[in-house]
Length: 122
Image 1 (spheres, rainbow, N blue to C red):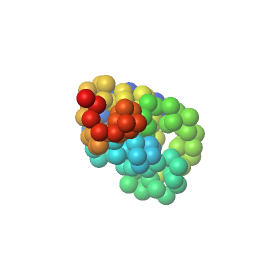
Image 2 (image 1 turned 90 degrees about the vertical axis):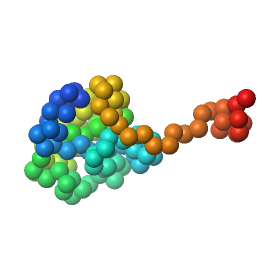
Image 3 (image 1 turned 60 degrees about the vertical axis):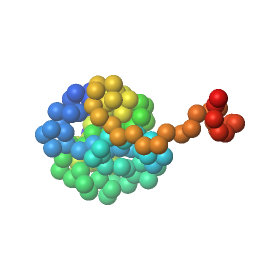
């Protein structure tokens, strides 16, 4: 089973028809920015049974820029086999945001200057 790469517009159409989003980024990435309602399933701990919330549905897997999901598409397909129909969101959350769809932002890491020198930058 191959994994088709789709655009954010195609992904939104599938979501409107009952598909689910699956965020495969690591926890620290998800904390900085996420798509509301996405299932959080980092690739480092991804197991076949973890997709129970996507059972019988189309599942759109995404990462930051699309590279990880493309690289691991075969693994995703194998773990989704018999559970859901997998898709990859081309361009990841960056493309989602660029297409004008909402994301939820969390605390951002401090800038380099502040990390190096602390305090005000005045």
